[in-house]
Image (cartoon, rainbow, N blue to C red; front, side, top):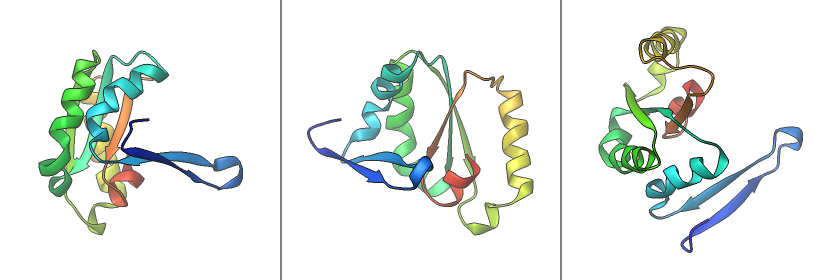
Length: 116
């Protein structure tokens, strides 16, 4: 956790999880993932709006941590929350050589998070 971030616990019983929220933490993503496990391949999934703002610092951070980084961009909006888009993502993951050790990183909320 960075000095400018805070942890928020989401209480969902057995599905509970913690979110780290803060300014500039995308640049720390590589360090964070490395602290959990050795990451050699990461696939970042985002939409075109979020890509313009946040994909570059995240990708750089993951690459600095030693991961090969692939970026996949979907169209923004609820229309992308579909079996067709999910299938396109699965096919793209196969093309990128994703396997059990690949880390999928969702950058964005809602549709992006659901699909990733």
